[in-house]
Image 1: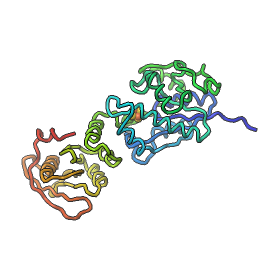
Image 2: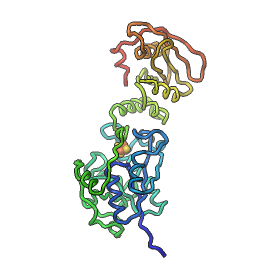
Image 3: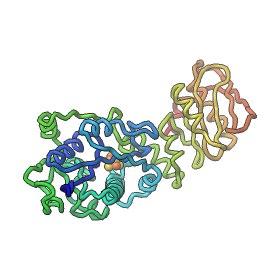
Image 4: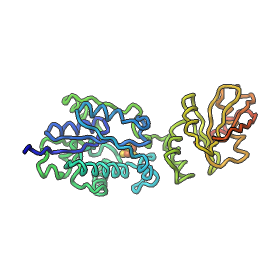
Length: 337
Ligand code: SF4
């Protein structure tokens, strides 16, 4: 009979910390498989595609990568996080608990013995404080099973350390926000950093957070379709139940057209180039004029001239028109989200 291989599951974002942690455990002779979680809020991953950053990191490490698309379940966490939000709309504690739970399930399904993460004590204010790490472990039902190789010597020994599955002496004692130790270790281990080109998590972006806050205030039961719409264009609040999104370029205009649903209204200039606007919600008579003026404002015409704006309900052929002059900046800024 062959010797049973010790196996671990790494939460691999592909950033430096998770790559280094995985490498340290691979070097101890443990078999590692990586998992990565995709949501609509990942800024660097086109919909339905594997995160390229984690993919490159897994390939470089020579390990298997399992990707979970979890947008639908994750949306409920974003709407109502038990532990609240960070500086923007990032529910980091709940997010980590959720991801660990899923990774823990996978660990059990695959016969792995523990999880590895790249967390460094004190590196992130919300989720990497000692107390936060304890809450995350407890609430994900994984006490003693999350190994953080970069900070392990500063933390209580985990089950795999106590059982001798990994050698604690070879683990590290990094802490704090300085990246210097990680960069030095990466050089020693010949590891490249693959930072996410667009900065990772949209929920930490102040502009996006403002839009999602507005959505949550006005439509608490928002859906993934609403989130898709938040990711593009200029956003305007016209009333408690009425919102306008205006494309900023041709690509956004055609994406908006694709995202529009039955019941939404589409606005566009009929005679010159300009944006597509999609109105979602209840449309009053006054809204048609305001939206037409906003579309005129972002069209290619002269800001003092009147323009014809066409509009129709999605899935209806009947097109109506409004001739109007562009809205003034002072009025517009009150409506901007
Ligand atoms: S930054 Fe975003 S992805 Fe990362 S833990 Fe926080 S909410 Fe989750």
